[in-house]
Image (cartoon, rainbow, N blue to C red; front, side, top):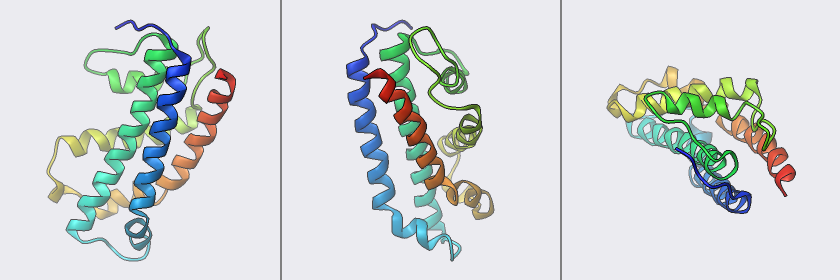
Length: 156
């Protein structure tokens, strides 16, 4: 699908998504901290799964905003989610890459979880698997914001 590029609109939408993800982590900071020292109950696991799902949805919203408003296109088809994240690692004549290959690999784990979460039941969640995503999520978010800031600084 082709879109008309609008860098100003993109920056505004990106800032909104950053604020939403920051609020997500602020709202659930107590649960995320608790999970570092104590295994979550099923209800807490379900909440953590929702946090991780929302986190990646926010990241993907940012990617879609860049695709639509800067690149002028986003992928379509069955594998558009993985194609979109790949698109963000590539430089174009309109912009430099948004994220590094290293960050792409980290985010790919959250994309895979997003797919699992959307297509399963929360009682299938296992802490030993979820912990691998939960423990580093704030660091991954910080890395993402640093790389995104570089992109946004170059757009202004």
